[in-house]
Image (cartoon, rainbow, N blue to C red; front, side, top):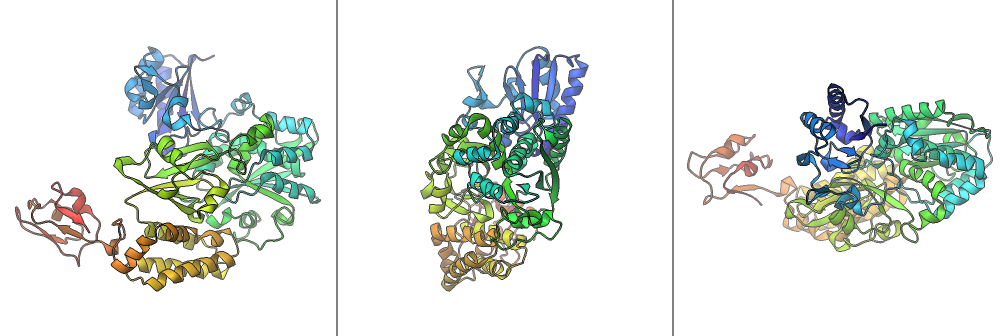
Length: 595
């Protein structure tokens, strides 16, 4: 037994900030102080509060150390682990109150969260199957195989009200029942881990922090529909997730939890990993299956749907990582328990990757029906630098914009659709008053232009033309007729594109047109960008009465566009100016303004 457990985040975010070196330094210092038999170092998955990484928690005290550096390790070992004195300067400030350490669950970031899909992330070593088993791991699979018929498993998932967390929100139990009803000599269970939305990292974090939960859930799905083989399709850009999945699958095979005759029940099920090359279109289920088959990732017309004719033309179910992560808890705690969380039509919790202009960027999991204001202001800590909330982009390139007037909207499938947005997979990018909504729409459209597979004309050409019109507007060359053309083109594409990528690509444009039309009009009529973002519509000026002639601006200008003599006002040659803003950023006297 160890007297102290030191948990260090080993997710991608903290790893990029040297958490691996911190772990190595910890182990070395522990050896030097002869504490190997007293202190255990555990590399976990993501704790969620990514803004404060690298993160380290020492138990049993529960001391939450944030932004830890390698050079902090000797002090932590000598003071805390050896002498029992907490290093207060490294503690997350919200965990300290009047010299007492508060529980993490009492902090602003965690207090209103309810972790179901993320229950083990930041808690266990994802590369140790014994730790997963210690937290009720594989008990749900055992319960299904020994107590339930396949139909009863499907019924439990149906009754729970779980809907797909990949974006569409299709009822998971219904999808499973459709595949179960189709007779075939072979069926397949697939997992979509090809998370491609800009700013989204929910699925990656689950795979990095709790890979066995997905493996267990896929085995349960295989039993429910009568499948013996599963595939996890994960993008190759997730090396940590892939590595931990490979370890977890091998461990599950060694423990007899994958393979032949699982739990001696005669049920056979195995898993393999397939790596994707980062194509956003492969998040669409038929394109994903086409890619697994070894072909170019392009969508197929539906019907027939995958439950009838999917992977290798056999009945197939496909759910995303977060959907599967909920399954073991539903089986263990019951459908009624899960259905009691959330709203009438949107049951359970939802994981969001919170990013953008927000104090606490990171991973949050809240009950469905939680308001956007609660997520941004209370959990996320609000907008930094005293700025005002302007909008949030939900659902990435396929989603829509939620403006300030809808700040109190409940985050569930139906409420978001009513205001022209969508849940998507869970990316939530917060924007403040300095954001140009026309530029945001253009950004997401540029992404979908690059990611279109080109199979259908509406997507291949339509989205490209849509992007060109937005680019024309941000350059100051747009007309009011262009706004009408954009709106018409959006609806044409939505109605005629082959797959979800094309059908949803116009959403950011339509939602920003709906709520921020005045910004489009300003770009077109006044040839100005109200937020001062679109470079072709702004210029920098030096105010003569404030300029001291220090020459700093001319020295930092990369285009040599600023001229003047020492102690005399300077001027900017607009024909040379790159509009990079370096001069305004460096000016110590506030003499340079952006118009």
